[in-house]
Length: 369
Ligand SMILES: Cc1ncc(COP(=O)(O)O)c(C=O)c1O
Image (cartoon, rainbow, N blue to C red; front, side, top):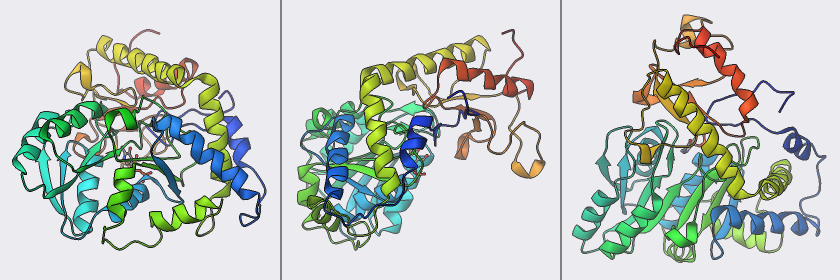
């Protein structure tokens, strides 16, 4: 990473040189018979990161939001009821996306800084004796608040309620950075993207889909064309794509998986944990306050905390070095400009010298070191 100006935004992350090189390939014929040898192992190997043996990996040339749209439109029908808790900008956007698809969205409003309310979910699902709720949707890592929710607890709540709804999880900013156990937890669709834990450029939505979600697809009536799982799976089976594939990203993903497995997934998770804990201890030493309301909710990426003065808006001029791309980022949505977001994706300890700029700008207290 030495040749780069590291960013500390929660994503897109820094792209290691090895991955930039892997993506710098000449066009190949994606309809050639040997393309199957490129695509199939990438899909197969990705399963390890999702923690699934039974799930099907499906990718689209899209950002994570496209992955959400694919999850919703392939498994649900107009008017279907879904259950979502709003506790940050990304859970809010799931709600918006579902409403725009004509779904009947039951919302549990939570304080920003809290996570998925498993006990509340259980209560609502138990009361839904006719099983009108077809899906529960949860944002794993709420990038807007720095809160990591307990997906296992949500699954246990659904089991305790004996409810058959699908569980869809947004792991756009958590997958490949914190453990994800799709099969063990009982997740039906996990949505992720190329630009965070996989350390690639933006442009590939990466989903894992359970057999139960694939069964729901057979009767789902929401319209879909570009994001139709059936077209993608049929084409992938013979090594193809229903349209032009993002070839460079497929090669990048192959290399990214190699990198993750060489370091070891557990070591990758431990590195993020170590960096986040270091940042959190610095925040505590400065006497500043994290947005996450309790220690068990603290995300490993990003950390968010209240700063001493608000971040300037872009129209207020260049009062921070490197604004607006920045070394780090301000808060999102209702935890807006008075908060600082610090991402650790693909960071190393030596990258942290960049944080001095924020101290110089008066956002953090001036402390030695
Ligand atoms: C948790 C989470 N979900 C969804 C998204 C949206 O993904 P994308 O911007 O790739 O569409 C993001 C983006 O930052 C995110 O952090």
